[in-house]
Figure 1 (cartoon, rainbow, N blue to C red):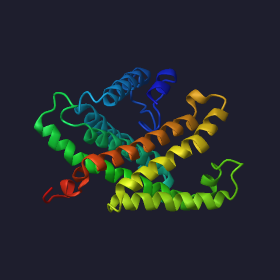
Figure 2 (cartoon, rainbow, N blue to C red):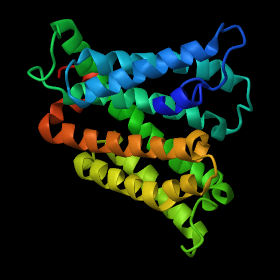
Figure 3 (cartoon, rainbow, N blue to C red):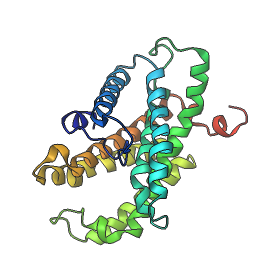
Figure 4 (tube, rainbow, N blue to C red):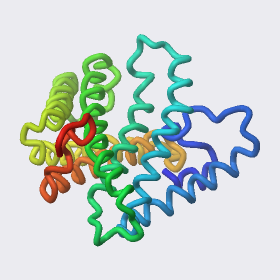
Length: 255
């Protein structure tokens, strides 16, 4: 998504839904933010610094509060669909927090104890946000069945059935992870399910558009890839450090 912004210097709506009119030289800010995203991604990929995903997650939270919330409140509040992109922004914030939790102290450099404690608190928040995203998007499938069913390729029959099936799978996955019902297995299955959608639904749609570089379909493909990766990170973290995802770290009580 950052590379898209370098070629098409406009904020992806996941980050900023509408460029503020008061922002001077917006293209420069787009370039700077894109370089920040690329640099952060590389450092997270190689696990060089635990601070990086924490800062990235907090940046997404700030963007949600100062950019998405005011914009969404100006829309139809009775329409859950207008919050879809805002929920995605929150989910990527959660994914960054989970990525921080996946880094051990040995992998992460220059991390003080305060940041480690902060990370341990935010990691379950990341899993919580991911779970809520699954539930919200599953609910969207029920509310906007006609629109969602259009995403199903023509060669797949019973489009409405698969739309409802996906809704149940999303809501069930989010609920299971939220309430720790075999969460590792469910997170793996959710990641596989979303990854299948990348190749069956999203990527063909992106390749079918004439200007794929700037298209919404290609961006949605990246969104789905990211959500799949978050699911796998949650599963991996549960395998290595199951106690880290205890919500008691967030809401109080003993670890």
